Length: 546
Image (cartoon, rainbow, N blue to C red; front, side):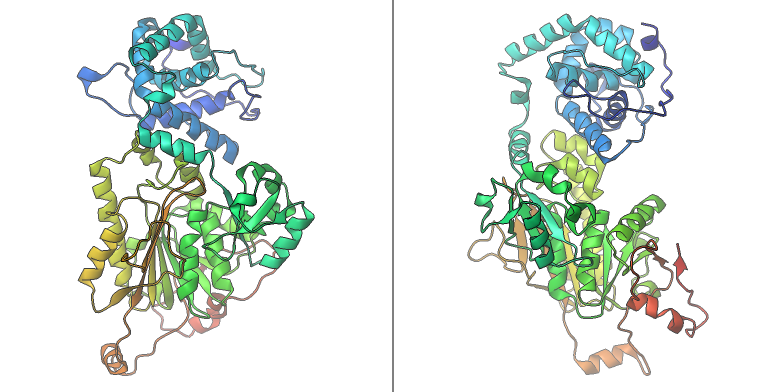
């Protein structure tokens, strides 16, 4: 097996790759390689005296780009499944030392992900198309099949020794519970009011064979119902996703499929946003969430500022917002913490929506959520084991506290909306209350505008919204901090003589996300202010258009 004996990893990816799935007989070669690279950079590193398998240095594996979102998701799912069973497969591999001698350590991650898939399929040989042959995958596959009897016997011995009906029984209870909930999650989609209306969507769904029902208990047939928390959100049964995705509503971005928990903070923003004002988004979020906030702001003639320092992400935003007809979004190409709270970029901001990185401990389908919602892939290791390490949790809370404190320093917002997908009180009410105690005369907790959450009890703080993860949806936490209005005399004293307050988002030092020619353009408050900007003092720069 010559290919297995080489250390060459930067294999050339064929130009014409087939799709990610080959029936139910395994994955395309590039999916295995991508999953191996993810596993390589996410696996649990053990002390030398406890290490059964050496994986080489992290970051050594070439990671091919997924052809599409489905390929990327499949690779992450395969890597995550392998992470969950890392200990078991290391024991299997260690008991078959000839594999360790035959395969270089830099390819052991590929061995693990392929071993997981092959044992899951009872070592049935997959059908391979000649157009896609990656040498490392071919070599590792041949090695595994050569010793498949010994590998299967080793796995059986481990199951007997640990008294396991199947390897899934070895998972922590919290992981098994999340997997169970993930299988029954409902499908949610919000109405893009930039292109249509709720009634328009209902009529179109009726034409596509979906009937409106009163409750989620009636969603067995092609049907939908209104969500109980978010006024622009519709609920479907998960098994109708393919049928729904083929409708013109979804293809034309009039109806956008996204996790319900991402709509909760948007609804909270709607409850506090004033007419003709601006929302600032800070943290980590998907292009879908940005579009949802943009549609919400546009309903009140408002606009949106997004803090995004990465060029690739700005391109994603530009492309999707063009498709969704969102013309009221501009980007500040810097991280939120790098901005001066009293700088010109943040003048006129009415509401700050904060969606910081968090533990995702209230998410039942973490892999799909991380990929779809631009979350931290470094969480994969902890989530595969069912709990977040105390060190990582402390770091997350410290970062969240820093971002909230920075937001409260911005002088103009009337409200700051803070949201997580965490079940830990440290990331939710505790961090909010710690910061609020340091600003008692400036901000106070206010109602979120959402109906009571699933964990509300008599005596609970009704200004904090907590939705527990369930068989229907992922969990989420939302709080709204509103500014305490100072007496007018105090405001004038602080502002100084001759001070003039602006009531629009400034477009100084931002990048406008222009849309494609076929999407009708409507002037936004930020765009209408271009002429006024030319009359401002020389120290201010005009918006840099993309």
